[in-house]
Amino acid sequence: MPDRPPGPPSTEGWPSELVLVRHGQSVGNLAAEAAGSHGVDRLDLEHRDPDTPLSDTGEVQARALGRHLATWPTERLPEVVIASPYTRAAATADHALADVSAVPAPVHDERVRERDLGLFDGLTSSGIRELHPDEARRRESMGKFYYRPPGGESWVDVVLRVRGLLLTCAPTARTAACGSSPTRRSSWPSATSSRG
Image (cartoon, rainbow, N blue to C red):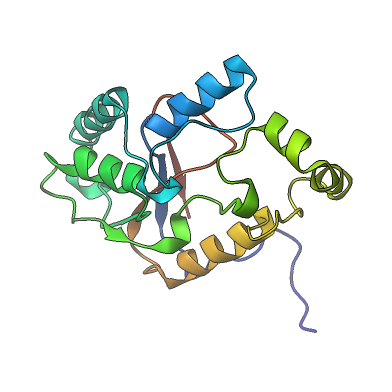
């Protein structure tokens, strides 16, 4: 094994700057809030998870993100935009970039999509505990990072697919990725910037 100095793993080959954006509020976020406040086991949704649209508020949030991006100097704007093909994330990217002509159209890539919850899709935490108590105990014993729901993905799986995406991005590109995270139910598209 070659000698390496101690320190963080190499970021060689990664984008020069990475901006992460979470989708705007979706009707799924509203359904999750309603289910939580009423203590029900399942979200009341008319759409499959990938087809869940933005709420009216989510559309307003996405356009506000676009107004914010329009204030950035051209040399700071993303050269590559990658969005989840899920309706809510794709719509967030489309609304945000509608009036920012210096940014290319988004490329849709499955690797930035929502974590697949498999059998648990559409269930609340209480629904999982009630309907699948053995799995709830297994998750508790394994920890949420390593636990993979039946037919779904662990967080390790998500890390591996996102890492694969980052390694295929141009190493000098300023990249923006628009996706979602099932553990953070904010009502505002959030952006995080990291320079390599």
